[in-house]
View 1 (spheres, rainbow, N blue to C red):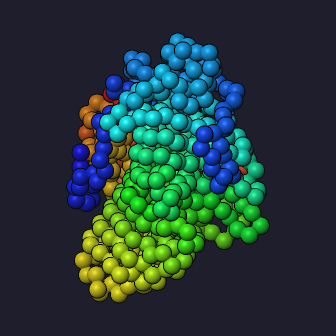
View 2: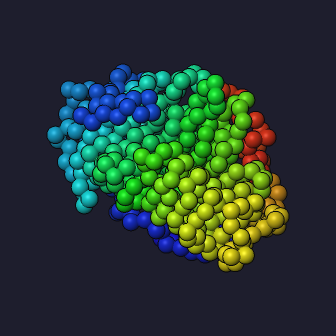
View 3: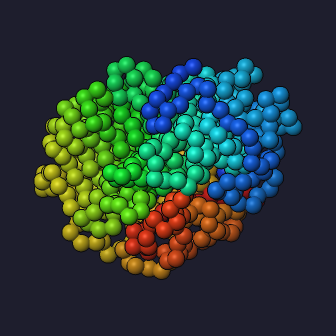
Length: 502
């Protein structure tokens, strides 16, 4: 499936190796130890249950026909260790994901809807041809909530696990702390994280693979279609906490079609501050990032939406950015920063759309740039040396609207609106995401729990989306942190489209 653009943005093929995973949000298709980010070990476990099997959670699926129970193993908030993993007698989540002998490569562990309080560890051994999948039950939504615990909410080890369609959060309202624990920590070969919602934790995700030794721990990772917001904490020096904090040495980390906004710190923080870790081998495609730093109250705000750099001597290299979408509040505000202190090697930028500062520092051996739209300050290069791009001193005059279907899930996608025409509403062609007769809902990504801004049965017509009075969720424990002046208002918006067959 190609990517469809309302404003004539060219069709492109997805750049990821996508497995045959066809699942809907609403209906089915068929002892390591780490001491960073608050500390966690293989003894972490979830306890208690807040609700019986049901929907629950942030994203409520559209109303669709009742799906047939899927094949696989089952866990529920009211499941038990004495269960047999069947839908009638489910396991508790700890039993289900911590290497039960019954679960084999190619199997799926389905989590019934509701909240699972505690911290959790996945230890499963799938294979490249038959990964093990952990995901929410069709039409339901599972929430993993650490509720203030010092350990990482979800740690993932072993090999070839797909974790998808889950919410990772920390409902503890205390944000002025020495450290707030990380949402996800990942080690192991071949893991994929798909369509997650990660919010109000410390850092969203940490992957330690930045040294020759650590590179063996997580040589390849794909993070796709996930939404990160309001992650971070406060201390006396500054706000802390980035959505994606990763180093890398060998192989490649793939980040595609994720949405990152309102971190307390940076959005993408692909960075190291010493010469023990490398920053190289990153592929960023189709990501959307805006207003990072805005989550923290009463502190200097608006960090870079995307930083890829090294505060030492190791050069940043093997970096590619394709079809990403950045937005900052003005042409002099921070959007993309490539480099930090170290001289750098090579970066490629193709068909990106960036509003705000684009900074190259301090020097690069090789920069390839084609097809980019850059509205804002460009520092560290001579734009005349890269003529195959659009550099703007003033804003465009026509709206730019992009619709990107989800490569893992039919009838799901993101809509990105640069509202240069200052319209109160925009008409969007969703034919690249929805089929005729699809029951659909469109939500403003800055508050997924709010009512849909549009819904109905798709009949092929343009769908009208509002650009005013859009809901914005505040950080847990900081109900006034994000001032209206710190939101995009009607100038920019991102929407999540979900649908299902009637």
